[in-house]
Image (cartoon, rainbow, N blue to C red; front, top):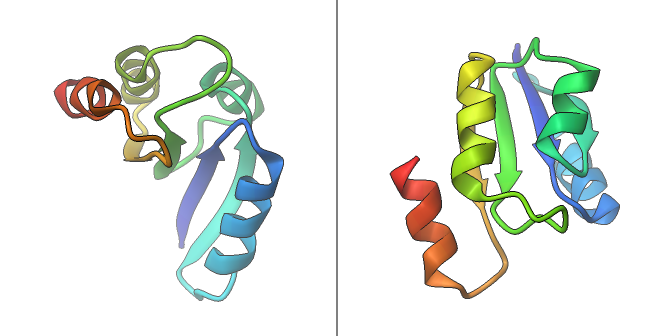
Amino acid sequence: MLRVGVIDDHESIIEGLRAFLSMSQTVEVVAGAATVANLLAITDDLDLAVLDLRLGDGSTPADNIAALDSAGIATLVYTSGDEPYLVRQGGGA
């Protein structure tokens, strides 16, 4: 079972991903949080973090990915924004 955490500052996105991924028999969303720090405070026993590149806490994609990487968690990033610099930061981390 793939253990997933979702990081997004919109609760509806977390719950939507939880509902969608619950249809899979191989994926379990075990935690959701508005920030990387909050997620890691809940658990670091994750195989994958799904990370919104644009969070409201002022954190950068590079710092967020580095924190998850330090915890041994692979990261899948996404954004609804159209700021290319966020994608470049995420890709360069």
